[in-house]
Length: 287
Length: 132
Image 1 (cartoon, rainbow over the protein chains, first blue to last red):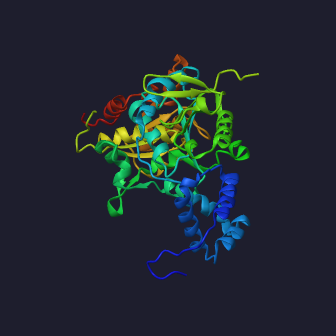
Image 2: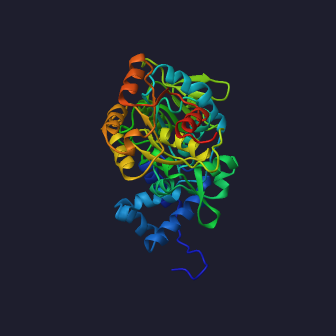
Image 3: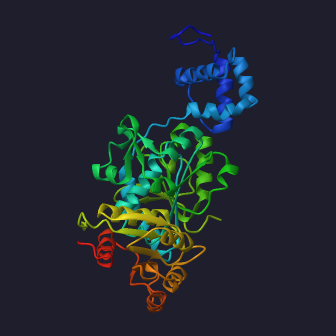
């Protein structure tokens, strides 16, 4: 294997990259253009080294056999997990100022409201939802709010459950919120309150796998931000249809600022609220 | 936010099956200087009050395994200091018969959800005799 400090070099032909990308796409829906060749090569090289494979061919055989859960390790290396608390907070504001009021009006007090963060990455988004609700929704104790965080990346889910964050992740939070809901731990990091950690259910889910997604139903609100941009058209539509089935009729989905459901699927209605544009599963299904 | 005097440090047990609701009340009470423990239903609450001293229990009504009414009436039938532990009942139920049932079970006060942070602190201060 390469010398110390020298990145190992494993020649990979364009045909091999194409086979690899097709495999990755079939298994995850993740689609990378040729322009991402450097990114793909680096991830493959990392996994070749990590698995002790002697070549791309040897690694690809191991991957297809899913030896030692290699597909999961590969997915973990391909997903991008950097995010922060209160990201795109206009959507959180929309949740408390526009969406939840209407949802709550249709339910007796004490009933359950289900909110889903997918992909939840390392937990910043589902924890942000919980914090935002406690700080900004006066009805927070009047309903049983269930928040589920799901991701395809099991490494990210483990970090989410631990709930330890550096200063960059907390940069948008007020000092008061950090003091109230976090405790300082080693290396200048903070760990989120045990009660908050216990209030979120973290699970593994693959957005384009209908069987996987069938376990998730009856959500009033889904945050699915900045992931569909990584999918090609077919996977995007599949993900949208899966998400549609996960929502209750009348439920809402929030996408990332550069994403538009109108261009992906005709199933949803567009709702323009003062703070954000969100998409709604209509109250009555088509057909 | 209501600030409890530094000498107060009254001990409060928050009993609710929703983790977010427990956290919401706990956060408000701790911010005001109370020491807070939690339980997820009446059974767990009973274990807590029998094993350590509290100055107040804040209890939800609808909970799995043992609801708030059963917990309170069982507590009041007991002996010793726990039988007279002040109890604030908080529920989504707002009918007159719910108030009557809470009184019959032994609640000292009854609040209908949603309850603002300042209100829960104010009532906790009154029921524990803490300075506010």
